[in-house]
Image (tube, rainbow, N blue to C red):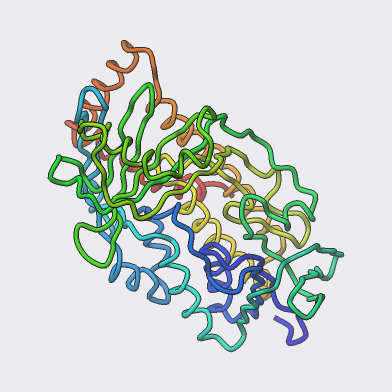
Length: 405
């Protein structure tokens, strides 16, 4: 790497951007992170980390720090609103496949400070908060980013630029990359409560099918037991955002889950509502511009694939881009990044998240009952259950990416 070589610019200081920057910095590549917000943000959507993700976060002690504050989840459930527990999945079946045979529940706003602290330990890494990316230009030698800050605008020159600035990515738009896919007609709402569902038989992670309104449960760590139970569910456009965000909506949802009488109330800690998309960028690389995480692909949250696949992007890209910057590999390696991660985004993340949603909302009773029986038989057979968990835990997606050359 030439001493005169400009740094890599990373746009976005979320988990994906910070991790990509950390992967570069620990390999001695200078990096500058641009973030529009004044500091790390409070995002309460993503919060499930799969085994291979924790493996990737081992370097620098990131996984160790996460384990200190996260909630280990060995078992998760497939349930139905009417028929109850359908299948119990034991991630310990993966104990010979990974050193982390469990899911880790930890909201991403607890991860970003860990990554930021690790990154700031490197003198050749710089994080510029309050710097909103505006546009980029590039040629065969350099890429230049214009950012707006409190004192005006600044132009920063880099060797490469990584867009990790979310689903509405200004980097992707400035690079002219199409974002193919669609938006689901319904919105999703997230409700967090300190009401404890465990005595009612719910595992720390459960997916509840229902033709009217499916539900996904996640228990998150909090200041103390029982933690926070976070529920994700769809809402139709018949309800306004204001109605969905009213405490009465959350109370009705919980009453419906536990079969309590209308009028019962519960401690509600958080509520949000948002649109959900299934989209993948046509290219993850255009010249010296690369995309990772939500900038490159977005999906519904069923299965916990979004943030995890973004982290897989960051690690894959960081390693490859560092080799290119250091002169040990040609720029063709960056095209391999696109082929590996774009393939996985299409074949695994999009396909499985859509399949999970359709299974949970299936209305045809014979189809539902056949699905329940299939799940029961799979969970009861350790060989079949392990195969199922290798897919749902994303271990297979890593093997698929690595097989692409």
